[in-house]
Length: 148
Image 1 (spheres, rainbow, N blue to C red):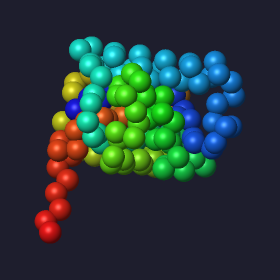
Image 2 (spheres, rainbow, N blue to C red; image 1 turned 45 degrees about the vertical axis):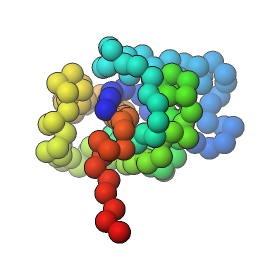
Image 3 (tube, helix red, strand yellow; image 1 turned 30 degrees about the horizontal axis):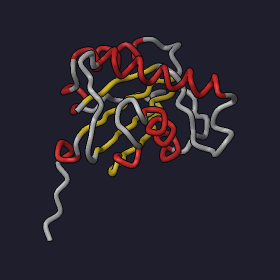
């Protein structure tokens, strides 16, 4: 499993209007790739089926649907984190307002120290409007089990 964070409003998938220009898309892609490598220096491209998690934390509601936030992230990581975003066979996407006494979930304390520290800094710096947590791994790591 790899995970990383970035302080930027996520793009919301809305067809061709997601990016204002090709440069905008490339800048967003570069932001994601840099964050992935910053928090996972020995990262290597993944193969096989994957799961993906995107949690968006914000201070001001912008009306972005949670399910539309993850698609541009997985699209932008195509070719860098994996060959094709169709490998992400299980996705979780959530958004959280942090303005109403948000309590950090206990299981977030199990994050790598660098990711957890970045997470805590976001909550300590009131002027930071956006924070996105991304996790990518093998589905077995997510512990999905169906007993038939």
